[in-house]
Length: 282
Image 1 (spheres, rainbow, N blue to C red):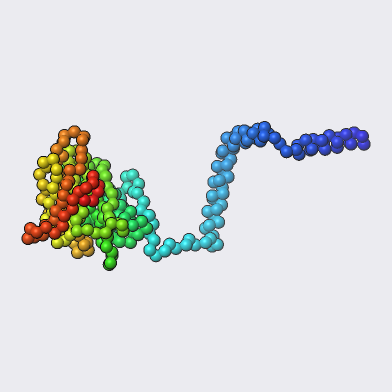
Image 2: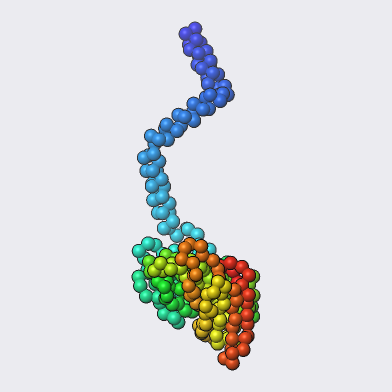
């Protein structure tokens, strides 16, 4: 009996000793110990996860799973960038101007037309139209737009400039915060081809215009451009022109000073004065 009581007392003392609240050293020790155990148990955890996934999949294959909620009728899944090596999906793009040639022609169109969704985030219901494209000085330029809806006073359009390998730049223009004007101009200035730098000016112009004149500073000769006919779905036409930079080094600037639109009788119908650098409307 005495021996039993002694054993019981030792058991009680041991339980009391383990029942005390551990100090911070004990917590740190447990933490280190747990990290060591986790490293050794990775294979077991992976096996359990695979088992759980398999069981979950089997359960979902039964007749009790919930059907996914249908998205709103106006919602569309976000555009996903094509995987490397896979051709871009242009099924939602209208191509009245055809496709640029070459192995990266589709990718150029995909890059530019995806920018149209940025004009009005969340609204991708309008069709994407590749209005025009062209090639000069080793570069391919593209213009895409979404026809405005009835009563809409702005236009969503995008443009891009690419080299033969598909490298280049692209971006959106317009949107709800940019009401349509009779004339707009923007562009880039650092296109290098065969040891010479070129600038690019592009924009839209009222359909009353049959010609667009671009004036520069630093003695650059004016450009005389013919508007690109965009069709009846668009309230404006577009224009594009390259000009030679007067500098042969990397000191490239925006030399456009004024853009003037003329009608068939030679009368001025619109004008804009450039007051900012490249990428800004004049």
